[in-house]
Length: 576
Ligand SMILES: [Zn+2]
Image (cartoon, rainbow, N blue to C red; front, side):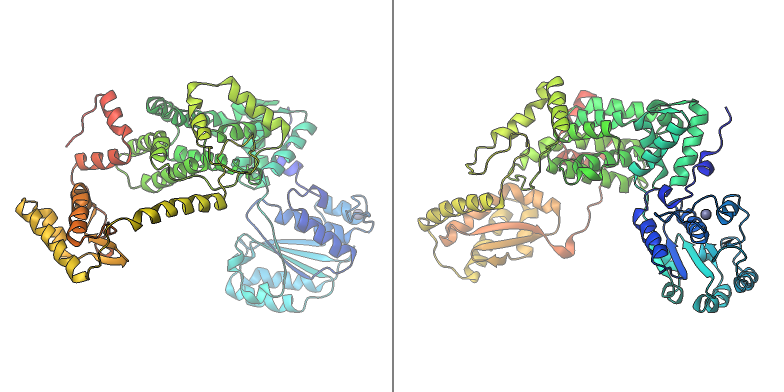
């Protein structure tokens, strides 16, 4: 099959066919219509977003002798024909990346003086204008200040910040946006249709995503896939050709974390690595997956999801099983792994630990259950999506769904607000939270009225404090004695004191005796409102360097008790 490179064949040649830059093309059309066209433009934006194409279309349109009502070139007049065949003398292109010297600019300036033979305007496109040398810039500036009436300059750049203010102030500036994945995918679908190539929407979305906002890149990837898969572009052959990890892997990893199933998570990871995928890319991809899940928790942000409709439904269904706290925590774990990846000596273990941590987030959060979501979630009203979610939830209704039931059981706080049946996430308004707080405070007040609370001086508190410290010394608890005697407690508010310590190790040492310390001082002073809190002193706060593997393991296991289980289950030994 004789396949013309689609990037060239489908390069936009009218304002209407420029992809994803509607506001710019309509502004330009209006300017032409009202004859308010500026003489110098600066087109900014990353590569492949349509800067040069738009410049060429502008040049063709303003020279067309028979523009349509919609301000499009007629494609039939002499000027249009010469533009389309590439022989027009009214457009002059200079690539400043390779021609950045004074000579080239002088040559251009000489050209500018000559009026056009055919049509009204001569258009000068200078691509990558930030690459011009300083002297070339200076030579050009005067022409830009006082251009002849027939000359229009279009300067294009990928690096706007490198353009000097004297140029910026003389140009009308257009910022070309990165083209949306959906716009690119739609454009590819159009091409596929015209070329009679069958293409799965998911496949085109993957190509569009890979192109990262550049239509030109999308078209060349499209060509490459067409050659590879002939006339049938499928999701499968796109991901294998582009070496992209299948969405399904991310969905099943999250599934494992929901079941708190560490072994299955590790097995999936192993499969991914064996397929030759870079674990670091996997972490980045998984973070993006969680981001997508977070985004589709809310109808308002679900629009930010740049995937095909069928995948979008999958995301929405999975996001219903996770609460926002869980998602935010997961993103935290992954971003930390991402940062640590490069410096880690055992990168695979690092990624495995991330998965283990993801598997225990639910447990970890249940421990801190004092937190209730105050994020207001707008449930999905789209019938189709709602149906899909209920279907998904009934088809794989396993015992793992328990966590949803648990979270619903917590919903027993009286509220006059009509509960939304579709919302699976607890909504507790700020007002309700405050009410609840007030109740607690009331109870506390009652209690406080009946307990001994003699007055005391700071000096007396200090004496009681030292008494306790010496009691510790007598019991040969030197470490505690040293920590207590080193600093007197600091008053934070009425009856509230802070004990500053050097590090987490001291906190761990003192903690078991903290209650004893508090009640000792309370009874010494006969004031039972006194409370203490430990804090690591700010000027001592340095990261503890782990000396041994055991220390490291214990510290990790403290954060994630599942590590103990894993260690036992796999019969591992730690190298101490
Ligand atoms: Zn024409």
